[in-house]
Structures are given as C-alpha cells and as structure tokens.
Image 1: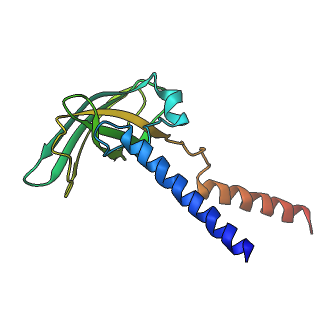
Image 2 (image 1 turned 30 degrees about the vertical axis):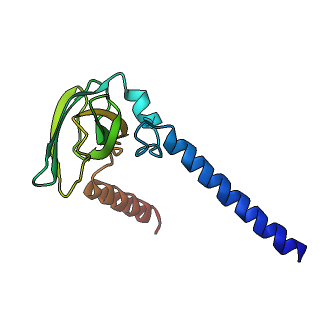
Image 3 (image 1 turned 180 degrees about the horizontal axis):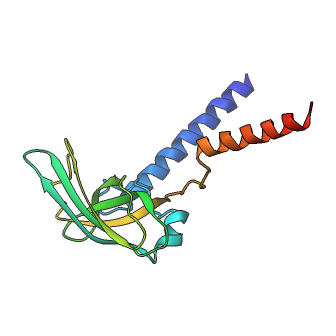
Length: 173
C-alpha cells in the first residue's frame, strides 16, 4: 500500500518538474513561441572544413500567396575535398533579429574542390511566421565525397588468373 502511494507521488513530482521546466524555458523568450527550439550547432565534419567551405550568398524568398519558399545558395569550396549533402539551416528573423522560424535545406549536388556551386530549391506548403522579415543562413553539416580505390579492370584480372592456372597445370603432369 505504501509503495503504490510513494510511486504515484514520484510520478507526480516528475511531471510537475517537467511542466515547470517547460514554463520557465518558454517564459525566458520574449515572445514565448520558439523557446524550445535547440540551438543550431555545426557538425564536427563541417567544423574541420569551415575555413574553406563558405556559404557566400543565400537568397531566400517567401511567396505568401503560394505558400512557397524559394532558396538560392552559393557555396564556395576552397578545400581539397569534394563535398556533397551540404546541410544549411536558415533562421527566419523579425525586425529585432529574433528567430521566428527555421528551415533546413540539403544541397545534394557535389561541390568539387576549388570551385563554387549554385543551387536553387523550392519548398511548397510552408507556413512561415508573418513576423519574419529576413533570414540568417549557415552551413551546419557536410559529407566529404569518398573516392573509391582504383581497381584493375575485371577482364585483365581474369586473364592473369587463367594464365597462372595454365602455368601451374603445365608444371604438373
């Protein structure tokens, strides 16, 4: 009997603590709406290339009547690595530069080493906050393109195996 009572009290204490945490987090933000969004953190892979991989330009346009968001990104890759799946996070900000919304974009094109790539994307049915008047975009992740090891063509490999087996059978009567 006492175990059930204390078990229920423990559950109530945990639920109460979670509610209080959520309430203080939301009340700590000026508008209270985006207080639970995690901060944007770049990946370790991107941080190793961040000096040489730059988001030179981002042009994000919101078309209210069509509920479309169009983005054009210019990425300069001055590194020695080819990269792909460049993940870009755009924060939609208000007049006071406070975050109102965010959107993640992934550029699947390969941006070759020592080049600049331009990518255009559109997302449909996006309801962006009416308070948003601008964007702040940044690269947060990237994948380095792995080049496969050079292998001998299959035809040559079969011939050399065949020649070796013929030579082995000639030595054996």
